[in-house]
Image (tube, rainbow, N blue to C red; front, side):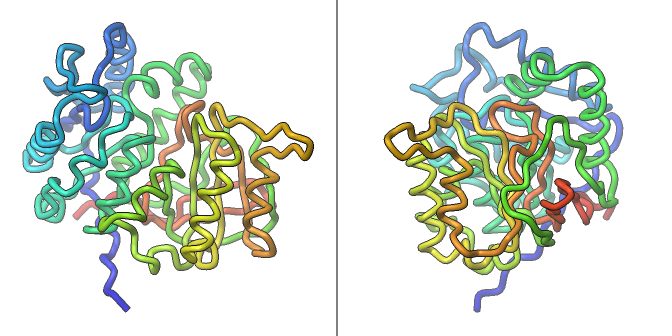
Length: 331
């Protein structure tokens, strides 16, 4: 059995620490500047100094990306190696992270682990770096369409303040954050309670990564709480991706499942209609693991921070998700 890296927790941030917003995948599109500015303001409310990387610029582009794979890797590696930079936040997701995974400086991560925040395509970065180094990555909001848009259009000021407090505690306190605060009503699709390390992200990116040399070892899923969300997919594609995880043995190893708020996930509307719930339970079959759904993360919700590799408890009976360990360390 291979030796698995232990969770590599980043150093806890302090008030006034430098956080850099960068573009590890998609570019900044013309007209997104106001969203980015508002996202920066949210990070500043958390008590951090914020710098926007030069690569976050509508004039910087290569097809659908902020640069070539080499340029994106150089930018990321520079931030990883810079001791002044204490956290890295993706400004958006995109379609390009796969192109430079083999160019990331893993030794720089091991020498000075830093929180990397983002979701969507950034799931590839979180999962690959966790597989190779044990880095605790943060499936969390992006600067533009997360902090800059969803935190204003989908929730009110009271929820924004609650989320600012939560993110600040998760990033600055070497203590277990406890129960994550729900905004809407979470759903128990299968009862039960389980504890285990969080593993997951955007479902289709997880499946893509498992076909590469950066795949999470099978043992990473032993007793894990698998969390995932999806965007712009029919349920038939999700059914196939979940069967991919079933056939690779993942679903037989996990202890529980947490599903985010789907975005543009189309149900099957044929003679035998099926929605996301029916598809998930169909693939799980008789596996008696708890399934908690409609949890506040994904492409259509302000994201609760979910640190990969940190132990959590999913309690579908009481519709709660709790972080049982700190995501950062004081040492």
